[in-house]
Length: 133
Image 1 (cartoon, rainbow, N blue to C red):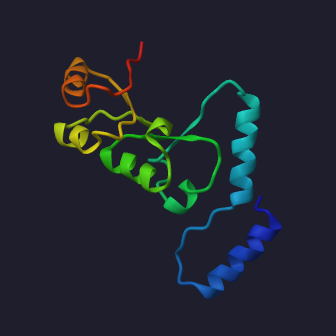
Image 2: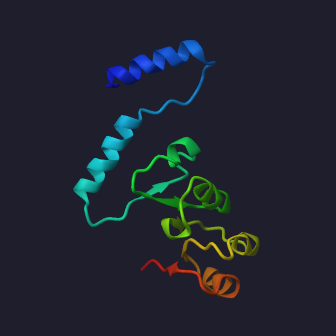
Image 3: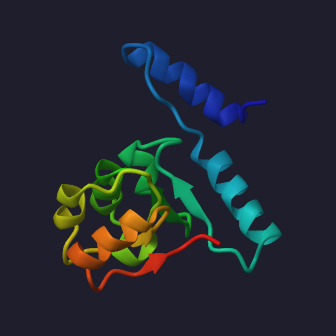
């Protein structure tokens, strides 16, 4: 059920702006994020940009990191204000061009393939990496 204040604001926005449009109940999002953190206090949560890449939402502080699956998503996370230490790049496509574009501002890179390991070692030699077990 929608929060009555949010529902009222949504109706007002629908009268004032062309539809369709994106609308987020920040109060509900923040409550869910806080509930997750309370349930898993030792976890370091990451928000998947593929779930919702809207910069307006990403710029809201939740204490989460950003999980990206492409160079574009990594760059979007940086544009939203995330630092390289707050971004995990967990995608199957790590081209030499994408790796070179991140030189000097490397996120944590998840390595799925041996070829990724070689490519990252050659093009981002100081990068932090995670090898899933």
